[in-house]
Image (tube, rainbow, N blue to C red):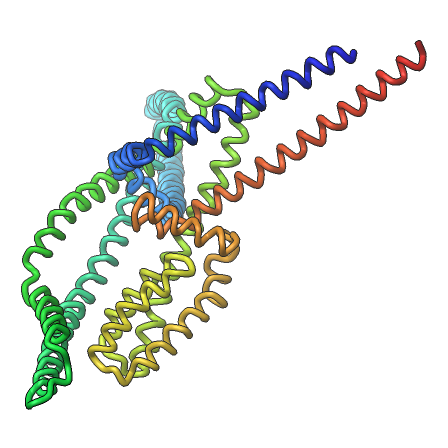
Length: 457
C-alpha cells in the first residue's frame, strides 16, 4: 500500500515538473519570437475580420430580427386560419345550396348527383392526405418566408437609420470643420502678429530661435488644415478595404441569420462526434452564456450611444456651446470604451471649444462630468444592468491590452471579452478547488482504511 502511494506521489511530481518545463520553454519561445507571433496572430485576425464583422452584425440584428420574425409568423398563421375559415364556410354554404337543389330534383338526377358527390368526397379525402403530407414543408416555407422578410426589414431599418444619421450629421460636420479651420487661421495670424509686434524695436522679447519654432509649428498645422488631399486619399484607400470587409460581413450575417438552426445542428453533431457528452453539454451552456453577454452588451451599448448623444446635444445646446452635434458624436462613440473612453472623447471637444469660444470651456467640462455621472449612475444600471460586471482594474487592463494588441476596434468590445474570460477563469478555479478537496478526502479515506487494516493485522 505504501509502495503504491509512493508511486502515485512520484508520478504526480514528475507530471508537475514536465508541465513546468514545457511552460518555461513556451515562455522562452514567446519572448524570443514575440514579434513574429504577434504578426502571425494579427494577419490571422485580419484575414478573419469579415467573419468577425458578420458575426457581430448578426448578434446586433438578432433581437430585432427575431421579434419581427415572431410577429410575421403569427400574422401569416392568422391569415392562413382566416383563409381556411372562409374556405370552410364557403364549402358549407355550397353544400347547403346543393342539398336544397337536390330535394327539388327528380330521382334520376338525384342519383347522378349522389355519384358526383361521392366522387368529390373521395377527391377531397385524397386532397386532405396530400395536404397533410405537405403540411410540414408548407409550414417550413412560411417560416423561411417570415425569416427572410424579417432579415430584410431589419437590415433596411438599420441602413435607413444610418443613412438618415449621416445625411443629418455630415453637413454639420463639414460646416464645423470649415468654421474651425477659419477660426484657427485667424488665431494663428493673431499669434504671429503678436509675436512680431513683441520683437519690433530695439529689444527682442522672444529669442529668434523660439520665434522660428512657433512660426514653423503654426505654418505646419495651417498647411495640414488647408491641404488635406493626401490625408483624404489615405482615408479613401483604407475605407475601400473596410467597406469591402463590411459588405462581406453583411453577407455572412444574412447567411448566419437564415440558417442559424442548421449551423447549430452541424456544430453539435461535430462536437458530439469528437467529444464526450458532458463536454458537449458544458460547451452548450458556455455558448449560451457568451451569446447572452454579447447580445445584451451590444444592444445596451447601441441604446446607450443614442441616449448619450441626445443628452449631450441637449446639454451642450442649453449652455450654447459651439459645434454641439459634432462634439456629441465624439462623446457618445468614445463613451463605449469603459472608464477611459470619456476622457478620450473629452480631448477633441476641449480643443474645439478652446478654439471656437474659450469662455465656454468651463461649461463644457461641467457638462461632460455631468454626462459621465448620469451614464455611470443611471444609464449603465438600467440599460446594461450587471451583464458586464467586472472589477474596474481588470477592465482597464483588458481595454489597454486588447487595444494595444489588436487595435482600437477591440477597445470597444474589451468589456464583454474580459467578462467572459473572468467567468471562465472563476469557473476553472472553483472546479480545481473542488477536485482538490475531493482528492484530499479520498486520500484521507484511503489512509484511514489502511490504518484500520494494519491495526487488524
